[in-house]
Figure 1 (spheres, rainbow, N blue to C red):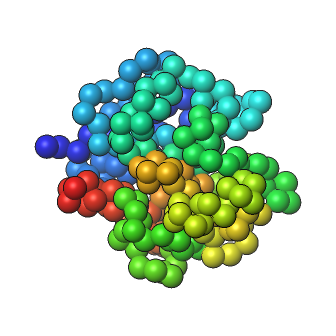
Figure 2 (cartoon, helix red, strand yellow):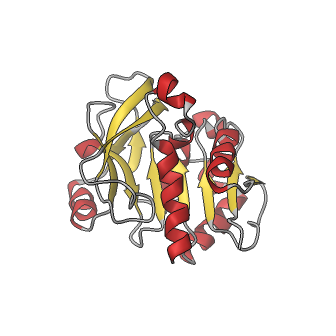
Length: 229
């Protein structure tokens, strides 16, 4: 059966087309686009993706208003059924605001927008999203955010680390995130939020422009895991 992914667009999303392009480039199947005001998701989805951007202009808190959009009820229901959900940058913020992921994304340390390629490591290489990476391998993926400073209380951070729910860590100082966390997983490992943008590092041309095409492997991991399930 053909791979079916849906990309959610909120008012202020600016990476939804990038996300759809990345999914099609890796899977060979065009991604479906879903407007935030829709009440339902398409049937038989293999992945729901929440893209980066500035949903609702980042008013109130980044992702807070988008988390109340009608479509998010369907996204939560899909996640509860085990449908994989990926949130990138603003999408990560939306997932925390919707309580699909723990913690919160705060203003970057230093109060500055960070836009550059950064080095990451996969903290857990036995997940739907990361199983294709080697332990300790350095990945190069771009970031572009102002509110990417991951925060959770010490008890939550200890639980995330103890249960293998930290997906990615920064291998360098980027935004002040607690314990250098760049991406986290839900308890069942089917929902992941990450601040770096894998959809911006998928083509060979990205090697020269952005330092690598490691982002492609995030999407390839998902397809490979679903194919073997």
